[in-house]
Length: 128
Image (cartoon, rainbow, N blue to C red):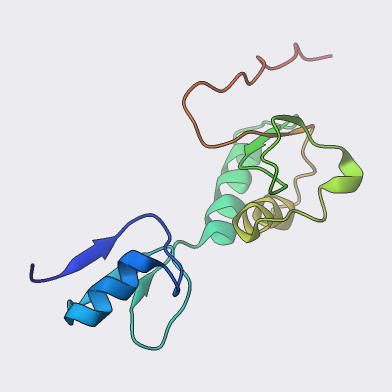
């Protein structure tokens, strides 16, 4: 193996990463924890969501809901109470929601769901 690209957002104490280090395999993490010896390719979650929300408002949308990764380590699925939206357990969820807020959008609702294809996100409500 010439190089390893780890796509799952590995952490610096991950056993696969440790094995690659022991073998001297050059490694790159995608969305992983920062480390002095392993380059990380990141995504501008906050900036991307800010640009998306700005684009939607420029198109005339006003009642914007957000479907996001879980707010808690228990990985609940459902509506997130407004009081809980300021304290997500996952940094990525917080960055993405902050980007929406940076665009001046106060979400109509926020729905958290674990990352899986069988989600039960409800259809949007009819405009009132």
